[in-house]
Image (cartoon, rainbow, N blue to C red; front, side, top):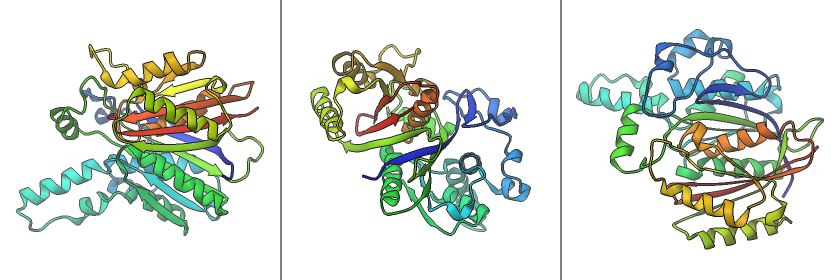
Length: 337
């Protein structure tokens, strides 16, 4: 497949906001700093990124988060050079969805404000970025549960294979108190720290002068699998990309280090891979920082690329993540010098 290079990255996540070149001023409003039972994203001052005040007021929290992150990632790149905007989300705009459903009940299905309904659609963020910069290019949103980001990334890689020069890829999910309670009752957060965030990546066909990293491979699979089956898939995935297990310098896993939990069964597969398959690799985790959410693997890519910027030797990075032990993904990143 055509090499795909990561040129710029941006992220809004818990415990601070970071992008490739700068750290926007954090918004210390009471809503952001409120104590909640999940890891909450630390948001920037949106006035510095989304200049139109009327547009900002109409945006819900996740829309502002995603749009601001996407605009930061684009930087000064001319809109005409963007060949596509591809976004991913697992649960979409939850606040707007909840607001619309509550209005539906409270107003007995009469005299409803259409704005929450319009803003609750999954493609809102990609559409808003395109409207702000008048980008008349391919625009797609993937809602594939725990593989949403991987689907968007694969689509971007195929678009570049077809000849596109630059693709903006992003993923975002938010957590609300209502969603948190529902997921707890369903047993989805047993021993798991929940979170939220938004990440964007500017991918290109050409390496340019200073690419941050190269995406070498991507694979997804679903279903309940034993450790042996997952290990075999990883070995075959690496072999297809001309590598062996000992060639992986960094292993990044979705281990969720929730200190409040006595036992976290979702971590067992990660720990076995670290011990049996990659004992000599550097082991990194990411969900202890960003929490668990459907598109958390996008934060893993952001963290891996960010951490490898100062590497002085070629580094192969393998990211393995599973979402509730059902949606599995492998992402291979190469950091050259």
